[in-house]
Image 1 (cartoon, one colour):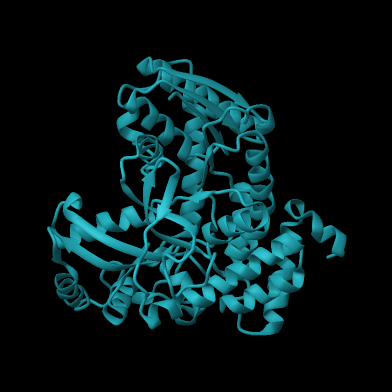
Image 2: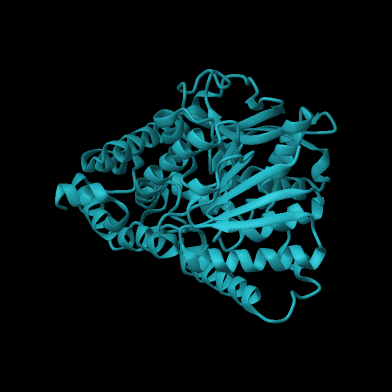
Length: 438
C-alpha cells in the first residue's frame, strides 16, 4: 500500500531530515505531509525536504500545513515529534531548578524539568490524539516526544488512542554493548525492559550464549579506572546485574540522591563539564540554522549531504514495513503494561520488546523482574501517574506532589518554590495557570 505519512512537529532540527533521508533511501512511493505550528520552521523544513527529494528524484509527494486537521484525513501513519515551547522553554526547565542546586544534564525526562515539560506536552499531545481518532482512526500513531512515559500514558488514559512510543536509546545502548563485547551488533540478542531512559538490559546473548558473565569481566576492567566512560552505568550493572539504558547522561537523573548539586565523577559537574546542557542547546540551535541555510540557499545540496546527516535511526519506517508485511520482527517500544511485565503496575508505559504483526506492535510476555529492579521503577511510574493527573486536572498541588516523588528537591518548601517559578515561566503554554492566578 502507498503510505500517507503525516509528520507533526516537522520543524524539528534533526528528525525531519533523517526521516526524509530514510524514505529516499528506501525508494518507496510515499505521500509525505509536514505539519508544524511555527510557519518559519515549517517553511525551512518544507524547502529542505523538497531539495532532498529533488536531488535524488525520489517518488515522494510533498505537502505542508500549519493546521493538522486539514491534512490528517487519509493518513496511514502519523508521527509526532513536537516539543512545546522549543528549546527556549526547555532552557527554563533546566535553568530555574539550577538556582535551587538541582543541576542536571538533560532535564526532559524526570526531575523538575521533566515534570515541567510534561505539563506543556500532555495537553498538546492529547489534542493531537483526539484529532487522529477523529480524522485518521486507522493510522499507525507514533510519539517521539519526551517525557515519553507520561506523554504516552496521558494519551492512552485520556483518549484511548493506541499511540506507540519510540526512542533510539535501547538500540544505541545495544550498539554500545556490542562494541564493549567486541561482537557484531547483529549477533547480540537481548531483553531490555523498564521506563524510557531507564531501561534495564536483563539478558544478553551472543550466538545463543549468555554474554552477561563476559560483560561483568569488562565492567571489572573498566572500573579499575573510577572515571572511565559511563562510570555510573557500569557501577549499576555490577550492583543490579542488569545494564541501564541510556547511559549516564540520562540515567543519573533517575538517581538524584547521588548527584546533589550536579556532582559527578572526577570532580565534574553534570550539565556542565559532563554532558554540557548549554552545548546541547547550542547544538540544536546551530543545527536548525544550518537546516534553514541549506533550505534557503540558491545552490543545490552538497553531493555528500545524505552521508553527512544519516538517517533517523529510530526505526519507525522499519516498524511500519514490518507491520504491513506481518514480518514478526521484534522492536523496542513504549506500550501500556497489559501484563507483559507481571510485577509492574497495569497500564503504566513500559519500554520493552514488541513484535510487529498486521494489527500493530504487541509487547512480548516477559518474566517478572527482580524486586530491586522493580524498586528502581515503581516510584518513577507513580511519579508519571501523578504528573499526568497534574496536567489533566491543571493542578498545582499535584505538580508539587510529583516534584516530591521525583526526589530532586530537598524540602517541601523547595518543591513549592520550584513549582511556582516553573509555572510562572511556562505560563504561556499552561492556560490553567492564569485561572489559578499564579
